[in-house]
Image (cartoon, rainbow, N blue to C red; front, side, top):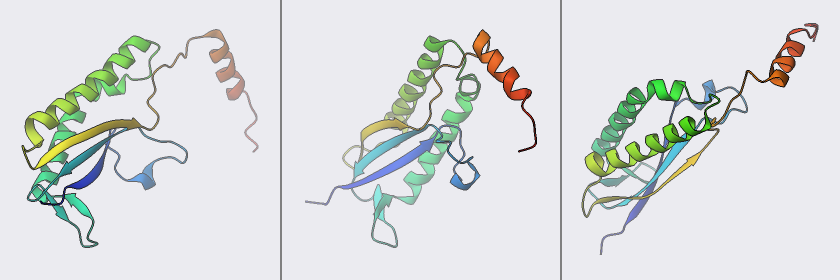
Length: 147
């Protein structure tokens, strides 16, 4: 029997793939997809670690780019004070990503999706109009700049 390989790929929701450009302490929202499969959908890198085959890697990047483009306005509005809308956006994003993988990416008897997980800071609620929030912002603006 052929050895079944596992690969985990992170999909950075905002598209910033260069971790050096992310402000310190900020953990961008990501979706991790764990794939299991065999050759020709899977291959090995130069360090003999499993990876997606080159054509599958390109295909996955195209799906990620399409998802980011499709959800660009919704993602930009994440973090409003409408918790239900924010959670619905997150759910729709995850569901669409999974459906696109199943429809356009996975290969029967070669490549399956084992799991999807989320990690990072998904801003689900942000209320900037509350009196105490405004008072805090005003207080911070009035702080001396001599630090």
